[in-house]
Amino acid sequence: MTANTCNDHGIAGKIERELMPDQSGRFKRQIDFILEADKLKSILRRTVLTDRSRHENSAEHSWHIALLALVLSEYAVGDAIDLFRVVKMLLVHDLVEVDAGDTYCYDDDGRQDQSLKELKAADRIFNILPKDQAQSFLELWEEFEARQTPESRLANALDRVQPFLHNYYTQGQTWQENEIKSSQVVARMHPVEDGSPFLWKYVAALIEDAILKGYLSK
Amino acid sequence: MTANTCNDHGIAGKIERELMPDQSGRFKRQIDFILEADKLKSILRRTVLTDRSRHENSAEHSWHIALLALVLSEYAVGDAIDLFRVVKMLLVHDLVEVDAGDTYCYDDDGRQDQSLKELKAADRIFNILPKDQAQSFLELWEEFEARQTPESRLANALDRVQPFLHNYYTQGQTWQENEIKSSQVVARMHPVEDGSPFLWKYVAALIEDAILKGYLSK
Image (cartoon, rainbow over all chains, first blue to last red; front, top):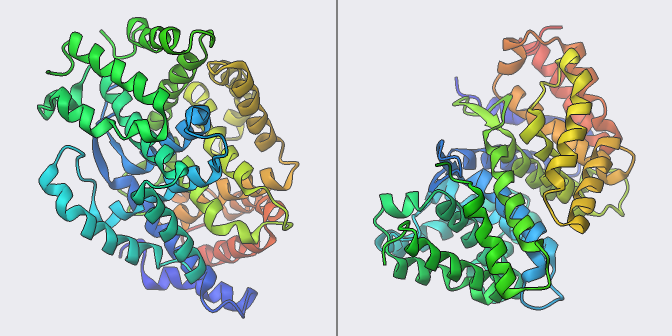
């Protein structure tokens, strides 16, 4: 018997019918979504932890980048940024990986059909929620993906800076395992500039340093 | 040579001196804090994932409870809650575990000296940040611990509801491994009511159900 049987999930619906009879499944949907989200902890990324002990998963990555937002928001483009929206985007945007998996950022073939997979995943996973919340989470995910607003540009910058820091501070472990060249890293990281020119200058300097130290091949 | 040598960390300071000469170590402190925070991913909790594959770590737990806040805030006491502050508390409050470790919520002996350990940890870890940010994070942590504001009461409720759901939906795995009785679970979970009377009623009903199903002994 698996943990998440219909019978077990059903209790949220039963309790809702007793406590909030007019909610037509709202609370049960919220609990179902929370349990579904737990699966993100089993999606492994290429990035390793800075102590190199293991690969990082997408749930702890999501926490780390939300923390980066709290710490580094002063370097964002513009000064009227809605930081809570940045944090919300960072907390929800990787949930599509529960279905679509994590595609390595330098896997160009994999990334081509990743968009379609993620679109289907977003539709299924966010729609576990009640309609208003599903719509709100879908909009956050779409905003993140479109990279058009200052908030999503900062969110995207942080989503790239965090694994980059892990790479740099593990002396390029993932770059070397995957034979990544500096030109690929520059191409991947350059959009950081749209969210934060300062963070891009920092990243560009670390790339130069990584080449000098032999973490990354030219 | 370990990953986080002074030499490696120093590059944030060097780049800061070149790009932001008036910042006196601000950016370097922020990067040091971000790298230190990575250690939370190695702090294991008693809770298991809902697929029972492994124990949960405190970083992914922090992400999950921040997500619970986005989904369940409508059940909070009061309607003028600052949800961003709830999320910030949930993202930062477990960082003290990098030094203090995770104490099992039913380990009464361990919890007695945990407070002092966590106070020391908060002082060290948050003070890696520049002074203004250290102060702000310390205040969030203190607010969470004091459970006096509606925001911290909701945050505390969610911090208890999430592992409780994991316990219930794994048929009481951690309760059984640690021979926990329902009276202990009731005592641990009752403060949920201060943050959300509805969530407490839900939890109370699940506790009854867990006893009926044999997940939890009376």
